[in-house]
Length: 209
Ligand code: SAH
Image (cartoon, rainbow, N blue to C red; front, side):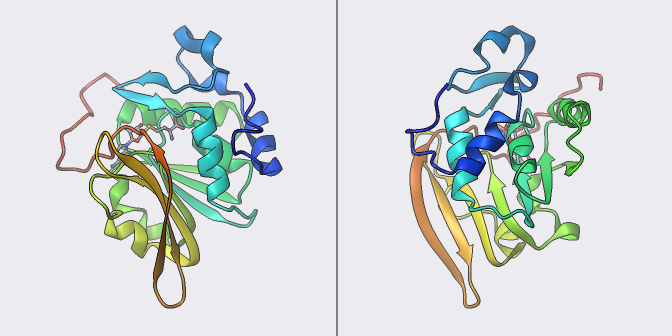
């Protein structure tokens, strides 16, 4: 798998990706495909993102090693693990309980102690830990605006990255909070699973965890 030459130029991001074993984040049936540049199913109608997309999103966050980062959509935990190699602390929220439980276990097994996890609806953010230097949403929100609590929990100088738009026409947008307001910038087209809210169905069917 080569990400260099595909728009991924930040050597620190590439080094972080090299330090995270993606095969530990995919179901056993897909281990032989873990290093191909494609998304893979992780159950519960969710996917682990394509490595190139993880790399581009991570790069577009313009991370610093003192940053506290909030991720919405833990999923397999892969993106959070990559972030954890680059910043001081990662807070990550997942609303499908079995995925949340598996990710917590992976972080412990891999010794990723600077990741703090939460089960719940990430569209509300994490008010007790706000403000955040960076916020990354790894599921696509309907419409053209990010959930208001997320923008509200962004520090001055902070960056929020979120895929916006319907199922077939999503684009990653970058929002920067300045002293005087919020500056918005469109980045590139993507295809993410939908960001759900409390009112759009409950994926948390009983599975005995
Ligand atoms: N970042 C993940 C990929 C995420 S797929 C990885 O690296 O593997 C999107 C994830 O967002 C799914 O696990 C989905 O359950 C979760 N999700 C969707 N809506 C959410 C919400 N409102 N709050 C928290 N997580 C949400």
